[in-house]
Each structure stands twice: as structure tokens, then as C-alpha cells.
Length: 348
Image (cartoon, rainbow, N blue to C red; front, side):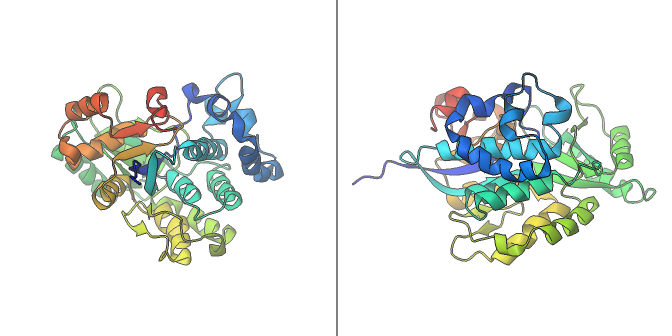
């Protein structure tokens, strides 16, 4: 019997992907998954937090409410996990899972390295760490030109900026937080971000752009958060995944050999305090697993550009420019984003 399945790597999104246009995402696509969403809400009920379904069904999108870490994280998890469940397994063989930043927690969940209850608890705990006040912040800045070619001058500028920041007063703290395809996400203290804004030339009247309600994750500024998380979340809740997991260092956690204690330490210590290299995760995904498709779960579509830029960087399937990527997406899409209705239909 011929196996007509296509191999696919699934990518889970992080913060900043549930926005105004995503309001009602669960109601539109996942009205049949109320039992799963209720399980996510168990901990939220105990904590007196707004329920996921209520946030999703709100009449208006509230930037303050919907993007707050304690709400956004669980909302995005619910959308992404429900999307993952809708992937047509008769059509796609999922060979690996990865994610960007908070998307790593979701990847752990959909790969069954955490069960539903523990995943909901972890994501809600980490998302709520900033409830008493966001530690530092993040800004995003392009490191490629309009053709998605690496710009060595911009990369050097950022590296020099971070080095110069380390020589300033102690309140100026700045680090490379996420390597996000054609973008650098910098994390730092408010003084550090102000220092960056003063030194980085404006691009397209948009960048450098500070990310609203984002803390300085993946930097040493979150060391205390890491310590608190390791006290609250025990290593025993982690298991070896059902499918290979690719982390923010490009390491592959295999189903039959993953050390659950090491996975706990990476999740709550290493990746909280150190740079998350999403570009490396995509490189490993395509080079080690050679998937026929990359499927990005919703909500949102913001990861598409970063993944496309990564594919161009590694000239995957002959894509060497933004134009090449767009052309391929029009004729025979390699990247399928479930947040885009036409591409969603190719996945479910």
C-alpha cells in the first residue's frame, strides 16, 4: 500500500500573535473543542482569571486585556493546540515540532512532553510572571534588506550596540533576545531599550519597534523568573515527547532518549535566560528532517515572514530571495499558515 502522506514540521507561535483580527478565533474554528478549552481554564478559575472562551468571545479587542501575559499566553496556547489537533493526519506525517519563544511551551504540549493540565499550568504560570509589573522589554529590528538578504552592517551595528551597552551605567542592560529570521529581537531594561532607540537608525518609519507588553525574556534579566519557575514547576511533570522536538538552540529532543530532567532545566532555566535562536530551529528542521511542508499553527500569521527569511538564508529548495519565496508560495506553497484561510484548507 502506497503512503501518500507528506512529511511536515509543525511550528507553534509565541506572544504577539493573537491580535484584533484574531478575536473570535476559537469560536470560528474550534467550537467543537469546548471540553479541551475548559481544561485549560481549570487553573484560571482557581486564580480568578478571565476564562479563555470569554476572552475570545469579547465584543471588542482590548490591547491591555488581550495582550497581557496572563491572558495572551493561554489564549495563544488554546488556539495553537486546537489547530494542531485539526491537522489532517491522513495527509500529513508530523516528523518534528518546534516553536518560537513562548511557542516552545506549546510545542512541548502538542508533542506530549507535557500533558494538557501540566501544559496549561506551565503556560499560565509563565504568562502570569509579569502580572506585578513587566521586567524590561523587547524591541524588534530588521537585519536583512528588502530582498531578504543579510545586511552585515545592521548585524554589526547591533552587536556593537550590545557591546557598548555593557560598558554603560548598570541600569543600561541590553541583549540579543531572539534570532527571528530576518529580525533581531533585543531584550533589555527600559534604559537599555532607550539606549537602543537612540542609536539604531530608523527603518521604514517603523523600526526599531518596541513590542507592547513584552518582558525581556531570553535574557539574564529574567534570572529571578527562572528561579521562581523552577520552584513552582517540578521536573516530574515533563516526559519524553511523542515526536522529535527542536528547541531554541537547535537541539533535538528525541522520543526515546530525551532526559525529562534536562528538558525541565532547559525550559525553565536555559531558554528563559539565554538567546532563543528560532532561525537555528528552522535550519535544523529543514536540514535534519527535510519536510515536504512546514505547517504553522494559528493564531495569526506573523511567523510566516521570519520562516520565509530563514528559508532564503539557507537557500532551501532554491529560494534565494523574497521574490523566490513569494513565487513558490503562489505556485506550490512549502509553508502553510493555518491563520490564512486558503492555506488552512490545505491542512485540515
